Length: 380
Image (cartoon, rainbow, N blue to C red; front, side, top):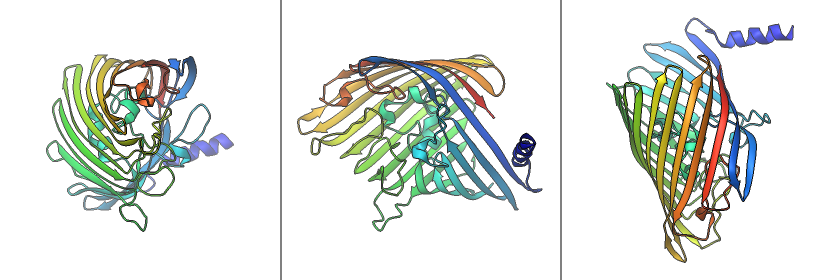
């Protein structure tokens, strides 16, 4: 009896609720085995959820209001398959939660918790923001191309497709008596034609916080807490036949950082660190051998500038990633991927000196770290 009721409920969500309205239940489960060669001097074997894509389920829907105008909404939950816990700091709908209006001629305006313009436009020119995920993110996901944080209290505009050109932006309110405290704004654009994709984006956040309300507050999932976080970049992808190649550049400026939301985080002593800057240069490629199998790779060079009381230091990061993915069906695939990071350049006397592949259990005990993963992904 219980199974019959549940099946009826799911079926009701997956079909039009009214003649001109639809509500869809969807989701994705990504689960696999990870091995890290050096976590503070020890090897780590672990099950981890949501690396190529975050594990999730959600509801999305539209209502036709006539004249090309629609009401739209989306509620999306992130979770950990291994323990059932909510992701994004324990939020019920931590990935996305918004409602708005979409017009086929004028574009779409949505309000709520959403992705910023770096994610919407620029991320798809990177390996991690397109087909590879977490392990291929730039050091500490300093440019948020892997969705370390979402933005709250956000008004977003997205243009319609204008002969391959699209643009948009976000503004996130602080919801505070200090209007500029923990606010965010971003904008981006892209042009797609045949196999060519060109994109650029910009983001600025003032006083992002791990505890106070406002634009960026993901309960510890923020990439950097600082007086100001500023990111900009551009990228290009080109597909010819079964091959796709890409290049992306991003520049992240963190003014007066206090800490990072990542494991192995940068937590400077008061007064020792005034500015932190990352420049990321990524080349990536993917080859579709058959409709079911692709192999991809990327190399990222990151130059960090570290302003401290001892002077300016320049550690550099070299990161290589490889991935192979095979579709067992339209909804289920298996994949294997690995990422290696080497830290070179100046020694700062901080955690910046040791390797840390995003997704590893913690930082390495030296300047090298390797992580490999074998996983299964199912979409419904």
